[in-house]
Length: 199
Length: 199
DNA sequence: GGCCAAAGTTGAACTCTGTCCAAGTTTGTC
DNA sequence: GACAAACTTGGACAGAGTTCAACTTTGGCC
Image 1 (cartoon, rainbow over the protein chains, first blue to last red):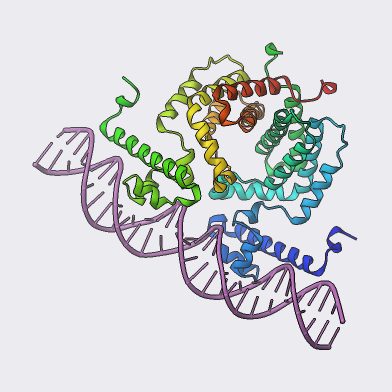
Image 2 (cartoon, rainbow over the protein chains, first blue to last red):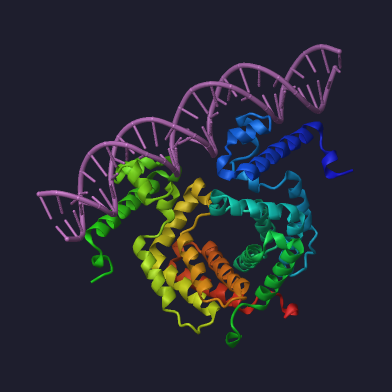
């Protein structure tokens, strides 16, 4: 029995509505481009009123970037599965690569949408905004008092690493290639970025 | 003779208008909070029409985050002053700390505004969006073909470092304290974040 | 099966941001 | 002082996001 079937009817319907709005949005945006689709179009295509649209998504952008509610459970599991005594930098690498693997499909779609739509390209929103918010909390929960800045440095750097790999990656290269780039970046940042004469 | 006096009348007037809009915006936002001030209020307070407001600032947020046009010259100088053969990581540290020193005053103001206004706190915009756009170009201009990702990694990590220090800093502690935190983070990231057993 | 409260949906009216454009004004130049 | 380019202005407009009160659906309970 999947996670999803554990839900009551009410919750399953909600999930269904969420997904049909998301699906309608992505379809329309794919067809016409982000700026040429408005919220009314999306609501109509999803057979839902404008009001309901805003019940599910806080902004139009969110249709592109919000994670599927089920994904949230998956990434929490990733975080909880890390052994308490594992070094933070290692945990961060594992969690992020694990999370990216969950996303593998959407990743390419979103990167293409972003490249095609000026407004999205401008946006600082991310495939993983929510994820990072929770990741920071998780990091905080594992941080002894007094080490907050060092922990934040690790988290922020891990994020920078992943962004770098994402930026360098082309969707056509396939997901494996992305992982490879990400590992390379993690490795370099782990070893230190200062030039040798400063070691 | 300052940079500013080198400008013609037209350009001096433009600068003056820019500054009076910015000043009006910051004053009102300080008094009432970001969400309680609208673009008409700002335009009126700056003795300028709504249209003119949007000639100078692309969005309301930009009044808080756009750099003073003169700042742009200052940071370009910072970039151009770095010797060609200096290691990238060192240049990045110097440029960013230099840039932050230019900003010293505004930094505290902006951090307070951001903390006080939900919409700004949510925003991913930054005191230094424009600066980073140019910094990336500068990095690209110094990057030999084939090393793009490594260069991007350095730039993104340097950014992560600075963000971390900024996040850990309280405006009340004074600017020197910020520099100290930033140096500490640069040093750690320079030496590598991986735990010892991975060295 | 039928009743009820809670959860979810809806339309309508509203505020604000940001865009567009055509007409007016100011500035620098010859 | 005439001209073109640069800047300003007002007004109309589209779309995002908010609010609210009325309506519908659902699940639990007798």
